[in-house]
Length: 348
Image (cartoon, rainbow, N blue to C red; front, side):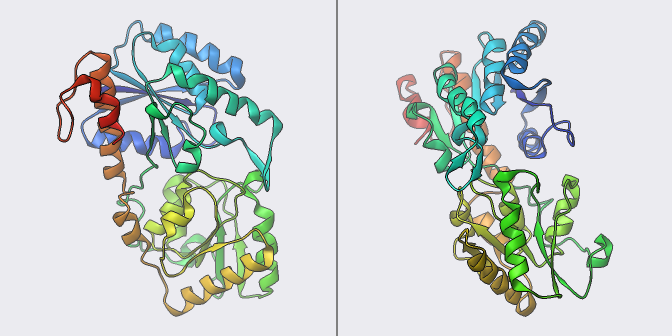
């Protein structure tokens, strides 16, 4: 199977966004051939131009399927695909808009949500990372929820790193905020206010951003608490990565965070009230002092959020889409041999 990932190539820090590359790597590990077509250029016009470039590229290249990440990348894929089937992954902002406050959406991000509505008839399958994103998919017969998986070979509690190795104070507890302080939707101000309310010289808020992806597990295995203060998310990877590293967590109730945390001791859901968030951080810090690490990694395994399990689910979708496009039905385990049962079987 030869699959082309169409995704943004506009990041200042990465050629391919790490979690997209990680999904590609997990599919390669299962035998798929994955290549990338990064879209260079911003705005609707940039993505439309990318679609024309993609069509020219596909005149000399053969792929079984195109997997687009983000609805604007989806338009580039649809324009360039020709007869190649397209699968679209919704990433968050494209489905629900860019939240810049509680229930406040940035006006210009409405373009993304409109794009998501308009593109649905032109793709074979729409993958949402969480149920709150899937609510924005009106073609339910093409919809499925598959979160991003976590590479537990990379994110695990067995990394031997000391605080001094990262330049962190050994006589303090660190509260880690891994998002961009400048993105309003990440709500760094809440983290600042909450830590200030703790009013302890033994607690510090750190924000090593931007951070190389390979360094993230080092921090998650070293700090005392990860905080996520976002106004809205889909299925935030950093929470799953922290869980895989057994790191205590305090997070707002956004996306699928509550489901991921479950009843894991040392992990807490907090409101947007700074006082409540501060109290939850205190509880997480106390847990870190008394018990050290959580059992979050076990929870990730139980939920099937490891990259291999998720890759198997994605690969199953690919096989069904390719079979449908070729007028046949993939007769794998649990798959109906009747072509008319395709939609029922793929989303069962």
